[in-house]
Every structure is written in structure tokens, then in C-alpha cells.
Length: 382
View 1 (cartoon, rainbow, N blue to C red):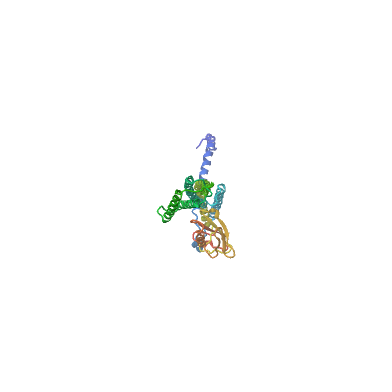
View 2: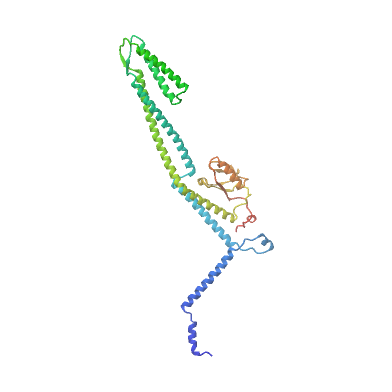
């Protein structure tokens, strides 16, 4: 039998101390956490109602948690898609981009054309330099002053022969830029030059009689005019060459800028594509995407997406005539086609305008109601 004197000590032992309260509180937290994990673990294992369960009269498993989760994910991916598309537009506005690939192709084409112009200017400058050197050499061999009149016609004949000789020599220089040394055309002209030169030598051997006055040699004057004309053309071609070189340098600088932006721009486009893919997957899960064999009807709202050309993305509503209107290609018949058939048709049309167009058509809203419960792997939306 216990001594009554021990009771006070036992009562004191039964009173809760602060350390004991902490231990009890900690054990309760562990228990609550364990029970919560069991509940959520069971929720993950919830399966969608099967057709056999409904026929046999079994109550379907609740889908409220899963439905709510899918819808939340759908909304999150929708916002992520809008945010990534906005980032692409901001990037394009910041760096003055319309279509990166198209801008690069246009600049490369312009550079090719400028290269052709530059080569033409360089060739013209070389030909004019050669012509100018020859003219300056010829003018040194022709007298600046000649008799203006005489009692005979010999001087007039000599001047005419000299003029013919100059014309033939100019013609020879022009032919040399187009034909080989052994061409018949060049040999014929050189034969004529030899005949005129022989005639002049015979005339110069004869004495000139009764010179009255002298004046400017017409042949000399013509050479002076030709020299001035050649020098002016040479200055013009050199200026054109300099301007063309500056334009090529500017295009090269712009191409370098676009090439440096390409990596970041492609990364933004990949983000848009990933968000779009996730959005479409969850859009299908909530049962708002019609069957694959659904035929597009008047009033349906379509979303046309371009992977490499997001500036062409647009929403299109099917008009009463069954057509939709899109950028670059204009009117397209959509009514009566499936989404896949319309995608193929658009790809064929855009192949004419774009290189390897990557197109996705999304049916945002449609008139005909679809029984989502008949879709494999999908449940009715709640």
C-alpha cells in the first residue's frame, strides 16, 4: 500500500513541463504531415471514370482536384505563352526587326547586286585609265598648229587622213576591250590603219607649198575634247565606286548586327514554341479541342501560328462564304476542311512566299458541340 506522503510528488510529476509540451507538439505535427501526404498520394492515384463503371452502376471517382489542377496549368501556360509572345514583339521593336530571316535574305541580295555594280565600276575605271593614257600619248605627236589655207589641196588631204587615222585608232582601242588580239575584226582595223599611215608618210615627204596662215589643229582640238570627256567619266566612276563600297560596308555591318541578334531571337522563338505546345496539350486535356475529323464551319475562330515568322501570327474567323483572309496569301477556303487539311493547304500556299514555313493551326472556338467523353484519353470538361 502506497504511502500518502508520496502523492504530492506524483502529482508534481504529472504536471506538464515546457519540454514535454514541445515534444507532444512536435509529434502532432509529424502525424498531421503524414496524414496529409496520404491524402494527396491517394489524390494522385485517382483515375478517370471508366465506361464500365458507369454501366455497372459504380460511383465514379471524384475528379475535382485533377480538373482544377489541369485548368490552373492551362491558365498558367496561356499566360506564359502571351508573355513569351510579348517578349518576342518587344525584342523586334527594340532592334527594329520585322522578319529576321527575310531581312537577312534581303540584305544578302542587296550586297550581291552592289558587288556586281562595284566590279563594273572597277572595270570601267581600268578601261578609262588605259584610254586616257593613250589619248595623252597621241596628243603629244600631233601638231597643235596647222596651215589654215594654201594654194594646193594637199594640206586638206593630209588633215582628213590624220582624222581618219585617229578614228581608226580609237576604234582599235574600243575593239581591244571586247575582242582578242587575233580576231578578224581587230586585224581588219589594223590593216586600215597601216594603209592610212602609209598614205600620210607619202604626203609628208612632199613639200608643202604656199602656206599662208596657221591655226588650231582640228585633230588636236578633238583629242583635247576627248581627253576632257574621258577624265570626267573617270571621276564619275571613281565616285560611284566609293559610294558603292560605303554601301557594302553598311550592309556588312547590318548583317553582323542581325547575326549577333539571331541566337537570342531564336531562343525567344523556342520559348514561344514550348509554351504553345504545353498550352495546346492542356487545352486538349480540358476537352475544348474538337475531334481530329471535325470539319471547320462558318463562324469558327482559328489561330494561325508561324514558328519562324511570328509577325505573321493572326486569328482568323471563318466568314459566311467559308473563307479566311491571311497575310501574304490573301483568301483561303477553310470551311469543310479538318485542321490538318487546312494546315497542309496553308503550307502549300506559303511555300511560294516563305522558305520552309512551319505553320500550326489551332481551333480556338467552334460552333458544333463536341461530346468530349467520346474522345480517347479525354474526359468531359467540368
